Image 1 (cartoon, rainbow, N blue to C red):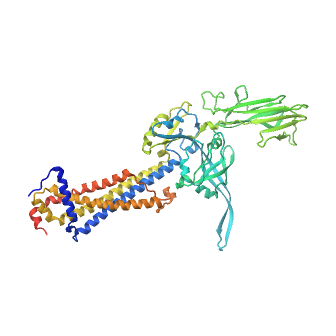
Image 2: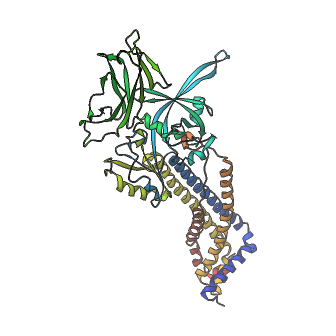
Length: 575
């Protein structure tokens, strides 16, 4: 009797025999049963460990990547030659590529930002400690915290910070109106003893320290301690002003007089500090002049900076700013310049508004009303850089390379030199570390699959050993070696599938528990996250299971060769 069947029916015969063997009593022998169970457990354990490893590493990489890019962006366009966006040279907001670049394929959005280092000061906080005598005592302490104020406006996508808000709300930014609201991280707020809606005293370094008062309207926490302790979110108009970008001009009247005339002078800030003044006859070096007004007058000042050529030709100069001084004369009598002075010879001013920009000078029955109209400044025309976000993370290298070819060291229409950096370059330490995790995954997957292969190989050899009589009878009836090997490989496949099902159930359950309840926590100062993240990608899960099945079965082809060495006569006699 010989086994013969059409090729398309052959597998069904082998499958049928394999199923009968699995259900037969021989499998329950004392020798084979423990080995088979161990092999199933080893496959299940390999699947559990591999599944958790992939889920944790994928989740960890995704969480850290999203949080780091959430504080900034995937790609940054800034002034060339700068190492950090936090202290970069300004570039003009009006660029040919903005905002049209946001419509290009693969790019999610493009947004402008600005940064400024800031010192936050707390109110006096009561601290307590225990003396050696055992008594409790307390003292008042004022905390100072350094941070970076990230300036944004109403067009900026703050969804990342909205998702991570634990108290309050986002600031309400408005166009052409400065918003004094900020959000801080929980760590900064705790260090300063601040609560929601508290006033936050802030100090900026310009030519002299500037104090600003903000209102704390929101507190966020991302778990990424390194950046949580660094970033605050506020109005970009404040950052632009505090950075002294562009030019800010105003006209002042000096406290003293010279030769019986008022001293009119320009007070200009920003730029490179080397200023030029246009009082109506073109740019010159003189910052002021003397005047004895006899009629209503409006004085205009246009000011900018320059490097070596006062005309500014062939130089990169700041956008000018314009300020005005209005003078109105009331009454009659003495000379308009015979003004009332105090004991020290300073002009006596009567202020007509709260901010001091409008005041009067008295000269007998004649009154001089002076109003200062401060320039709006040109700082709003400058930004620290442009943040570009991509739709798909995997497209980041390609898009970054394309933008580098487009901008790097190529002068723009404003004659600016720009540089393009991806987040992988800006946060290289973090992403190199994340890249090493892939190597760990490969090592763990390889070791666990090897363990499963060794145990399954042992189980297969045991199954062949206890079925030696069966193998001899099959060969005597005309079965080929390959047919018999397929029978045992299919049988091993059933065992592998059983182990994989058990392993998947356990692995998915453990991942689900961690995902919903966060049982396992981390030290955020070391791992950037407060709990172990898990993320199961469907494609990765299917690939893991298929690879486990295929690799294990392929590896079992080698031990199944022992079947070819079994002779029918000896096998039938084998007991």
